[in-house]
Image 1 (cartoon, chains in turn red, yellow):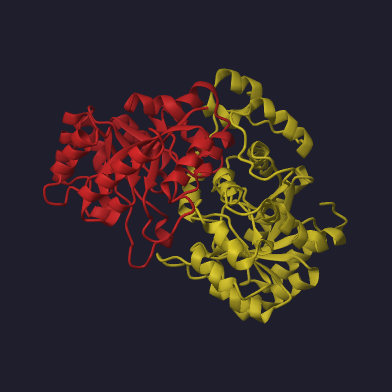
Image 2: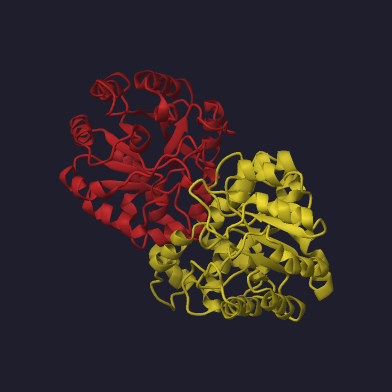
Amino acid sequence: MQIIDTNVSLSRWPLRRLPLDETPELVARLRRYGVVQAWAGSFDGLLHKDIAGVNLRLAADCRKHGNGLLVPFGSVNPTLPDWEDDVRRCHEEYQMPGIRLHPSYHGYQLDDARFAHLLELAAERKLVVQITLTMEDERMQHPLLRVPHVDTKPLLEMAGTRPDVPIVLLNAFRSVRAEQAAALASAGNIYFEIAMLEGVGGVGKLLQKVPIDRLLFGSHAPLFIFESALEKLRESALHGRILKGLCTDNARRLHP
Amino acid sequence: MTDIKHMEARTAEHRPTGQGVTRRESLRIGAVGALSASLQLTRRSWAEAGSGNREADATEPVRTTTGETRIWDGHTHLASIRGEKPADRMAQLIEYADRMRIERLVVFMGWPFAYDPSPDQFRRQNDQVLAAIHDWPDRVLGYAYVNPNHIDHSLEEMQRCIVRGPMVGIKLWVAKRCNDSALDPIVQRATELQIPIYQHTWLKITGNLPGESTPSDLAELASRHPRATLLCGHAGGDWELGIRTVRPFKNILLEVAGGDPTAGFVEMAVRELGAERVIYGSDAGGRSFASQLAKVEAAGITDREKKLILGVNLRRLLSPIFKTKGLKS
C-alpha cells in the first residue's frame, strides 16, 4: 500500500531530541512502511523569526534527502514584516505546493485580516494551506511554552468564501470533535489528517461523520510515532476505496 | 482515564449504525461507517479470533518483535464504547483487540464515570466489569474499583470482587490523592492478597483535579508500603517527570497508557527504570489500541524488552493471585 503522509516535520523539536529527528533516519522509517510522499514542514517554523532561513533550509533538506519523497511546505508567519515575500519564495523559488501555518505559536487568530489576505495569496498561487491546530497535549506543555489550540470557529464562515483554497487542518482532533469536523467539512474546502485522532476504532467512527474524501493520512512524525497512525488503519479495518482514499488518493487530488 | 470531558464527549458522539450486519456483509459493502454493526456479539476464544480476522485485514500489524508476542493490555474501560449492556461493550472492545492481536484485556471502572463515587456507584461499576468477565472469562481480567473516601465499603468490595470474585487487582482513580494515609488499609489488604494497585496519576500544567494524584504522591505511598506493588498510571502524563519521580521506588512500575504516542517515551522509561518496570496499557476505548501499542512496538528497544512490556511483566505481577485462584496465564 502506498501512503502519502501529510504531516511530518524536519529539524529539531525545541523541547526534546526525538529518535527520528535526523532527516535520513526519518526518511528510512517512512520508506519502510510504503510512504511515497511526505509533506514536510519544519519545527524551526514554530519559534524562529528568520522564517526565510527556515524555509531555505527546509527546501534544501527535502532536495538532499529522500529522492523526491519529501515535499516541502514552508512556514509563513503573517505577523512578521514583509511576510508576503515568504509566500512568494515558497512558491516561486522552492516550487512548494503549499505552506504551513502555526497561528497559535505566531500569535494570531483565524479571524485576523492578515489570515484572510494570506488565503487570497494562496488562492492566486494555487497553494494548499496547512494549519497546525496544536503540536502537543496542552496538559504537558513546558511551563514557559504554553500554547493554546487554534480556534477553528472563524473557519466556519470564512472557508465558504474561499472554495479555491484547500485548507488542511493538522493535529485537529485534540481540540476538534467529530461533529465540529463535519461542520467544517460542510462549510468549505477543508481536510483533516488522523495523527491526533484517538478512541478505539477512531477512524471508522470518524467516517460516520466526516466524508472520506476529506480525510488524509498524517503521522505527526517524528514528534509522534509514525506507526501510531499506521496502526489506526488496521484497528478500524479500513480497506478498498476507503483505505486508498485516505492513504493516497485524497492527498493526490490536492497535490497531483 | 485520560481526559474525562473528551472521553464522555466521544462516548456520546459514537452512534452505532445498527445491529445484525455480519462482518462479511460489512466488508462487502465497504462500509466502514457500519463498523459497529459488523461487530458480532459472540464469545470467541483467542485462537478463534486470530484466525477469523486474518482474511479481513486491511494492513498487517506493525510487529517488530520476532516470534510470538503475547500482548496483555493492562488498562481498558467499558466507557467510551456504545452499548446498553456490559456484554455489548465488551464485545466491541474484544473485536478491536482481535484486530490488534491483543490476547487479554484488563478492564476497570464501568460507566458513567464519577470522580468521587459513592459505595453504590462503585459497586455498580464493578458489577458491570464482573458481567464483562463472566462473558469473556478467557479474555478479560478485572481490577476492583474502590474509593478511599469509603474505606469500609472499599474493603468489603475487595472481598466481594477479589477474594470471592474473579478480579485480580485494585483501581484507584481521582477521589483522593494517594499520599493520604486514609489509603493505608486498602494498600495493606492488597499487599496481603498479593495483587497490584493501579493508581491513576497525572501531572498537569493545566492543573490537576482536587483528588488527582501525582507521581510524587505515589512515591510517598510506595515509601510507606515497600511491599505493595504499585502501578503509576499514565506514567504521570508528563512522562519525563513521572519517570524520574518513580525511579528510586522499586515497587512502582510505570504504565504507558493514555497519553499521546510521543516518540522517545518508552525508550526513556526502559533506560531509566529497566524494561521489567514498564507495563503496556492502552486506556481504550477513550484511547486507541493503535496509538498506545505503537509506543512499544516502534520503540528503539530490544525484542526481549518489548515482550516484557507487552505482557510478561503483567503476567509476572498477576502470578500470585493467579496461583491463588487457580487461573492459567
